[in-house]
Image (cartoon, rainbow, N blue to C red; front, top):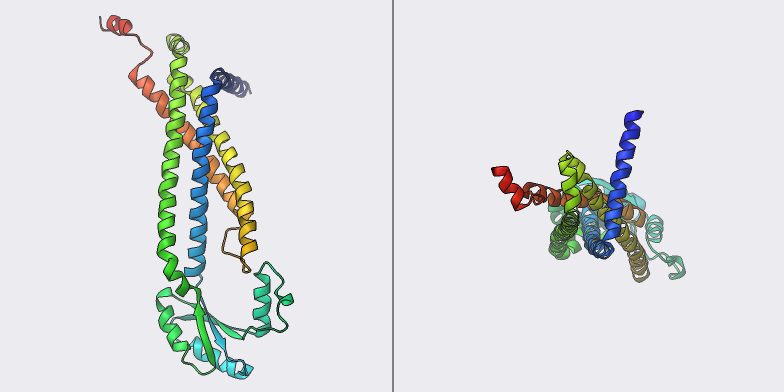
Length: 312
């Protein structure tokens, strides 16, 4: 119990020293908060792009489903026989019959408007929902199915995706490098701020060294300072990104009848919060540790006269 109380008093001392140091250099600290916030904001935007692009590609390539649309005059028995034929084709994992009514209900579920008010009767045909083993076999499989009697058309989303897939991968790569750059920029910003804080407290640190303070005792207030910069910057960035993401989703849903393949708000912000807070805290602590260790290794707290006396 006594050890816990001692640890709490020590932490309280370090936290007080850190806050006092930030308060004494309000202008510099404010500039750092703004720079870290901007860095983490663009880092968050890069992560959102990467997550949504991966979501789109995974939905198409890892869940490749082909639709074989049937003739309107095809009976249920004929459709069932056709299902059996398609199921035996190479590359087919599973086949499900989708009636006109089921197709209409599915479309209604995945639209943002009530389409029953727009049409007088169900215009959708019955179809076979075909799950494909591999995207590589999709085109050949499509050619085989479309030749079967009773099949009017065959479509699958991967065919449309192929034309934009290189652009998606390029955008994802750009976002990845942008995320790395913004992380580096935030780290440099915090490191420079902590370096200035160390220079402004040289006399205090020298006294602490003379009375036998350990290196970690000296480091800890600066590590806490970097941690605070990272956490507050992450919180501000997350708040602004969250507000922006809500408006973006509302705009997309108002422009497209079918629900787009964007990641749900709660899922996106939950994952982004974890990533931003972890990255922000790590960047702050690591940048501070680099800045402090650089000064300790250079022995900047020892004057040239003291170095000369030590050599004698």
